[in-house]
Image (cartoon, rainbow, N blue to C red; front, top):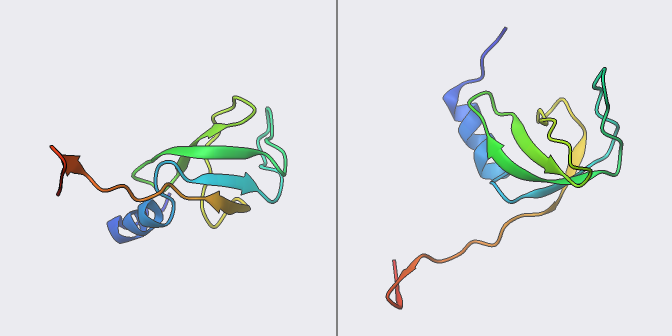
Length: 89
């Protein structure tokens, strides 16, 4: 098994931050219960292998492997300013 570099994983985390909504553009091949094209879900975490952990609209949680699974980004979380007592940090 080939492990991704830390640089690769960081790029995936930047490209698909937690809160990103994606839609499958092809069925995900899962021998027990595939997730079908058109299903949307939210990225809830990115692990050290660069896998996107998902909360799918159909209540499934199958992870997405960028550059192997086919999907498109629907939306990304808005960047929010951190505030403390009304002052921007």
